[in-house]
Amino acid sequence: MMKNSLVKIMKYKSNKALIQFAYRFLENQGAVLQRNDNGFEVLMPRELSEVLGTGEHIDICGQDLPKEGAYSINYGSLLLERMVSRACRDITVLAYRFEVDYLKKEGFERLINENFIFSNSAGKIENQAEIRASYIFLTCRYTAQSDEQKQGLVNLVFNMETGAGIPEMAGLIFASGKNFTRTDKVLLKDKHLERIMKYVKGQLKFLLIEELKPFYETMARRFKRDSLNLEEYYTALEKEMKKNLKRHSLSEKLVEERQQKIRLLPAELERKRNDLFKKYSIRVNIEPCAAVVINTPAVKVIYNIIGKDRNSVSFTYNPVTMALDPVVCQGCKRSTHNIYFCGSRHLLCPACSSKCPLC
Image (cartoon, rainbow, N blue to C red; front, side, top):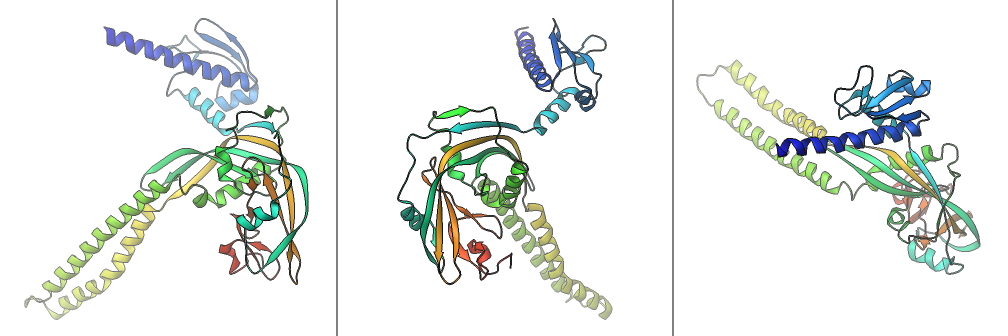
């Protein structure tokens, strides 16, 4: 009896939470709501009713067996699934203004020399100026798919002007707990988020290397194990087939056929190994689910490269990390502290330095 009562209480709390979610979701989507004893009455825009597959005027309740014509909100209900799908589609974007008590004004040449490596070039600071810089703090949902699947959330921060990724900023940005002012105006410009997500998706392997390291290690271990088992099987099979060739009762034709099968074993083993490799290869997909745009004071430093073909690099001093943001390779768009220049003076990372993708 006590067990049944406990189940009813838990079920009531669960349904109540779902009703609250549905109410907030519909309210946020522009519906007009009126609560009643069993749930609430909804008058929603036509576009929303088409998405949810309902009429524009409906009743919603949390009971398993709602009154005739009403929609039930419980786990597994089609209406709830459509609401969740719609809610996950939209990206929540907040905007904050960050202020600092003190902004660094000197010592940038030392920071450049300590944190950046220039290949076959040197330079000096030409100019510096205080600016307002915008950073985007992204909370992304990722799915790593292989023989198994791993899902999770990861926080990423990017300079919105340069596209430079600043992973250490994710743990520092809200650590101070002060100097933040919420602003109504979202500072996202046209296609800013789209451009940033191109950087994110192009650098998945590097951005999630720590997050997915155990998953990669597990898949690599299984691939190695199954590869060894496969090799042992084919080695034993080849040995057994060669042993059978010594039987005196075999005709010349049958011997030739079996020898041909033995010669094909290495190619068959390679195909099986390739199948294993595909099985344990990891495909990663990542999608943003929330974003915070942070506008902060910063310092832009123009650093002139000395040489036959003059060039300049723009650095941004970040008051949150108290360091210079990395620069972005013009070839692969990856953030880097190791700077190379090709013959056409494109700024490149070490991976692109041997062959410039832009030349």
